[in-house]
Image (cartoon, rainbow, N blue to C red; front, side):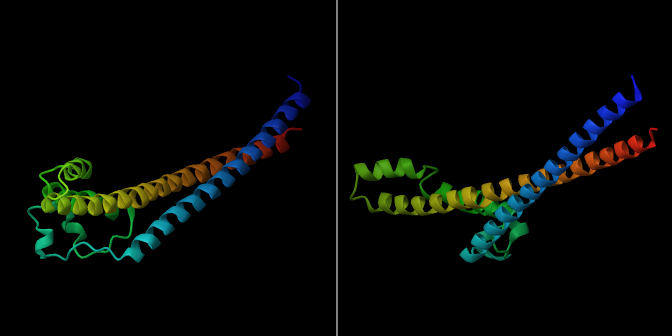
Length: 180
């Protein structure tokens, strides 16, 4: 292959590598923005709700019933993992005993058949409120936080790719200038 052909090919690869580097930096920046946006909004919204795990020693957080939640005792629910733990570990367990494990949909159907049954009406209301809060914590708290964390790792991967590609471009430029 002629030296001029090789130089032309190397110039093309340097231009393509430079373009890929710029795209990776841009993608990393957007992903980092997504991470920051998601986690900041989740933290702000959850913090505004002022939801706290019961304090250590509080009977509502019995270590026998809630061994996995002891690490959160007294803490505010202000991030995705805490939202998931509170939703599933705390609310979920409380909901399971309201109507012997029946869901809101099941109790609601029974309550519609028997509208004068006060126990069913109370269970229906408690399950509705609990399942609604649980769903909000899991969807708007944990899921959105998880998307933010995925964006964070995507940003790291994009920036690492940009560093690698940028290094290869610099090596290519160095090699190109060494050709005479």
